[in-house]
Amino acid sequence: MAALGISLSQLITQLVSFLILFFVLYKVMYGPVTRMLEARAQKIKDSLDAAENARKEAASSAERVEQELAVARQEGQKLIAEARQAAGNFRDQEEVRARRQADEILERARVEIQRERDAAVEEVRRQFAGLAIDAAERIVHRSLDEKAHAQLIDEVLREGLENRQN
Image (tube, rainbow, N blue to C red; front, side, top):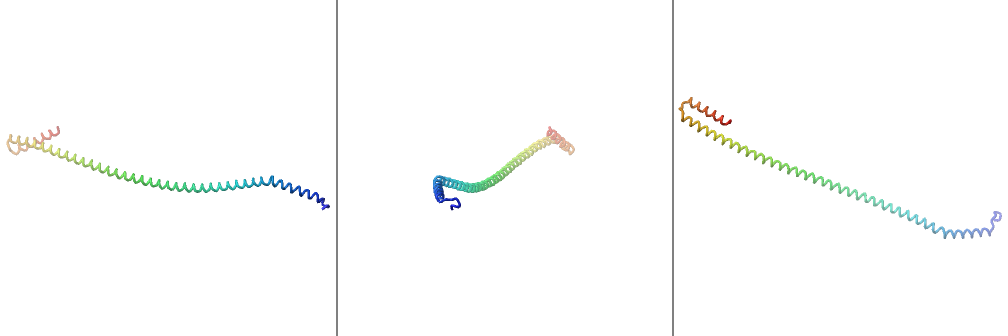
């Protein structure tokens, strides 16, 4: 060893110095560095756990949102169906009401027409009765030959038409 330039006393001194330095570094540096590495590893593990939890929560939130959307769609479809049904019912009711009103109007018109027809017939009867009475009075005042009779009827009818037009 002497040929290598190493002496036993130097080797022991360096070995003791190395062990002291190793012990000091172990106590001073190794503990804090290991704690720092362990803390870093724990922080990374916690971050990974938090990320996993966040992913799971996001997935469950997405599922809840999808379920709520599905429920909302179903409710919306149900509301639309109810609205269509209500509109159909309203339309049917309005059609029935409109038909009923039309029938009432037609019935009133029929009654009014019948009343006017009856009034017109009654007026014609009164006028005819008046004409018949006038004709009878004139026939009694004149002779009853056929020519005079026809002339008298024509005259009464002409006067009746003139009175009617006035």
